[in-house]
Image (cartoon, rainbow, N blue to C red; front, side, top):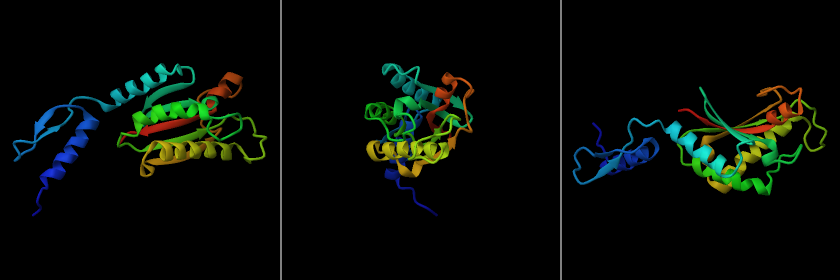
Length: 190
């Protein structure tokens, strides 16, 4: 037989309530303690709304977009927001944007995948041997920044570099190539 630690139960239920929604409930056997539990609220909808507010408030609708699919919610950030051309060092001016996005996502229990993407133009910089190297370096630097500066849990973060092989549109136009050069922050469904 096992014993239930009511104080631990209270803490877990309170934490779950913060993630899933609000409804007061009494812990069985403890009449004076209440727990917040959320019912009938989809946390993904609230997340999308909070992220869209950050994007809109910073006038970034043309450079950051959200997508929801079977994997979860993806924040597509075009590379010109975060990096100089053919570079993986995060611009100082873009750190505030990452900070605001992190304030929304770091409280979630979900795993986060950070994906680097490039266009199909061969890289000519000597620092990175190929677009593969650049895409991985951009994902890695974004992950390190979010972990070290914003407290994202490293246990929840993974990175991947896709180079040119997961385009969102054609690479035949400069606008298409611009859209394909991006970092995606994917909030994975549980």
